Length: 396
Picture (cartoon, rainbow, N blue to C red):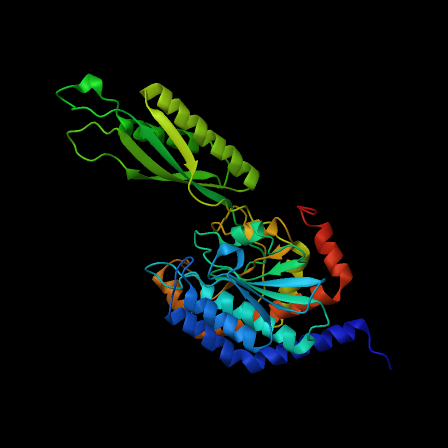
């Protein structure tokens, strides 16, 4: 009797789960090795070597130094289309180690890629594991998008550990700007009328932005710090500088907020007799655009492990990530799966949780769900078509 396509799919899913179960101890060992040896943005040399070594040993074609970053890589099995990218993050937080759980993200993406190659071989399409450095502020994925790493990809898949079980990530757009004011030095008592106080201008900018912040829409805000404010109390500061982080619910709203920052800085300069310079200090992280059809598929697979994902709580935003830039070009998922029940990431408690028994259970479950979702994308043209049809940036 001929087997149905549903039966074939179920068989593939079962084989993927069995493959991952066999690899569970090895994947957990990778996660623990990364956890014990944290490395930071663009310097994740040992992490990249560990991950590419595992992939190369399994027969993946590995390219290192992708997009001009020494610790970025791609590892491919198969060729052409359809094609799925599994995203691996592995940078840590200075002073906190893996307090964002990137050790688990890397191990899950690795495990899903290895299982897919073992079960599907090279004939189902292309499976690509993408090593993405410096998510914590450096923007490795931004550079990879600009370099064309995700061109010709049908779906980009990853998960993130957290304190919620959410099917999609409410991630905002984010960028940082440096604002400098130039004045004129003078003695504050001997020749007070000769000075033009750059620090006073910067302080006034903070005051203006505080007023602006009261009427910003939900999820938009500007947070600043003083990075230069003078050299001595008996010298009128001729130079002052601040660094400002801007966030907004959408990339378009962030661009509007950036325009407001420019306007405020220019207005303060005019009022204080200083000269303002406004320049972007970081890469821009776009807001995350969830592929609902793929997130639903991932949630279905994860439910087999007893983990039920729900929509995020309205009005709650969980920061920003360079996965947003990927999601603007290709259907993408970024679900949150809880490894602790309260608290927050970017804390010592969360760093400990990323090496806990619960984290191990989550790692196995999400690796299975990622692999099964990727197999569905590779196997079902109608799923790919629906994901692209519902993608907000089709054609870009």
